[in-house]
Image (cartoon, rainbow, N blue to C red; front, side, top):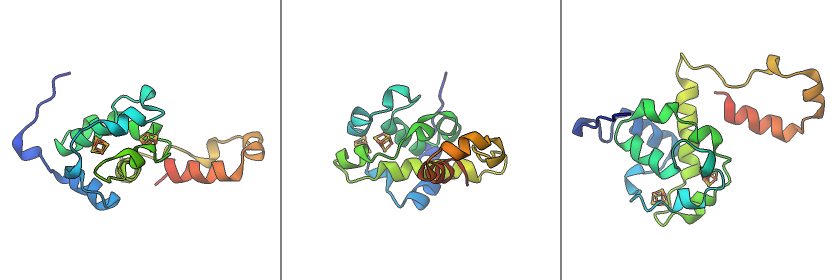
Length: 137
Ligand code: SF4
Ligand code: SF4
């Protein structure tokens, strides 16, 4: 895939939105890769968390929103504890989830109607709550 980067895209509207929601300064990231190296689910991610930050700053919104990284993120805070710049990467992942869930053409990822009664009887309530927090706007 050929990716085109223009000067005008840097610190674009998308990156600003992610910063606004997460309260994190994406420019603080100096791409050391510590976050991705320590992430327990990075093996299953399309892009490492550090790449998501770089892509966001470069205005590659579609590439970021189409990757599975922020859906796979388990909010375990391992990356956050390892970041030498003090960035809360889990919050950045949450912010990107919210950006996509708030887009009109993209619907919630979880519907109550799709869950069977049997499943609802067995699943721990806390799992339901965190699932709805993560997959719905
Ligand atoms: S650990 Fe922090 S500074 Fe290093 S790449 Fe990740 S977010 Fe950037
Ligand atoms: S919070 Fe998410 S991105 Fe960070 S280490 Fe945990 S699973 Fe990986």
